[in-house]
Length: 417
Image (cartoon, rainbow, N blue to C red; front, side):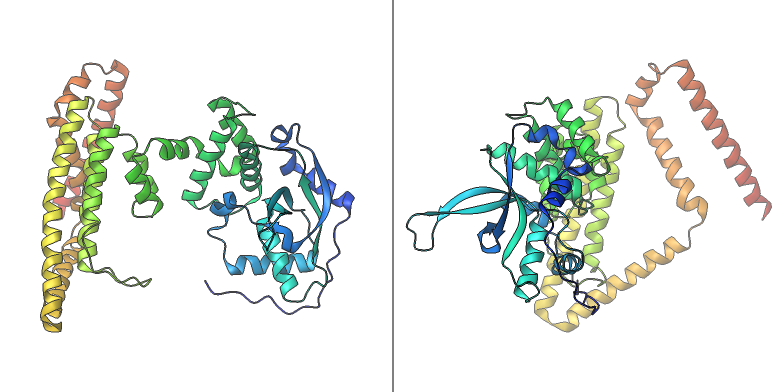
């Protein structure tokens, strides 16, 4: 992302906030919600040299998506409006430059972006002093759980970067774990409730986030974090048993080993190999969804095995295509061009076939196939015995409506002959 240049305006001097303003800033709504976490935690207000402040490694997950543009925009805002919220730090001892003896430094608990923005302003000569006024220094000795809980609670409330599914999921999961440890010792239910209270707009999917983070197969979770799999499909995979999830993960791991010779540049068309890989992926996902409709575990396992067998066939075809393409690369440009020409013709034929399909062919046929699979499903037939009379009547009503509309549509088509 290109950096935006702030418009040239008259420089507004930044007056450090008064100590009263600093204290008032700490008592705003966001900070007040963390009161439970700060029980028994004392602090003092200090002016601290920029060079004595250290970045907190536990904050890395929150800043991994920050850009230079973000820091520049924040620096411009601080230059114009002043530092509205103070930095929160705690004391640490570290070896001095000569490696002999120790000196006091301050580790950030809250305010890393503000610190970076202030440092940038100083380096640009916008500030003539090298101290950050009114830092809040935690003086109570805290364990690692307390430090992490305070860090995470501050970020959960004030950061806007939680549209990133992976960051939100990991932060919420880690925060809930912290709250269940000493000195908070909350139950899981209490920790979830507290998390929702301090950041309701960022925890709407809390239960789903925790289930993904805690129960999804580790290989599938890694693929999700690397954006090789989508969040919505992983919410489906997590419904399977650990053994079934492992079987699914093994298939995807194999698929990802094939070189599909795609372009790494953004906005470039997918190669024919990438399209084939996506087709295999999507078909496998649909088959797995279908397996979850089975009532009994043995029937679900049978459907998964059938899906894996179909996957293996597609995998073998893709592997052969990839090897043929690699051989063509060795042979020269003409061989590559011939393969690409053949694949382009195939795609055109497929697209033309799809474009020529009618509404009925595209939509009704798929519904009819699903109904057909249900009719043949032994588990569904057995499940009918347990269905309530009310549920049966509702199903019959829905089917009658479908039959009536389908009959009317058929008559309309026949009248055009």
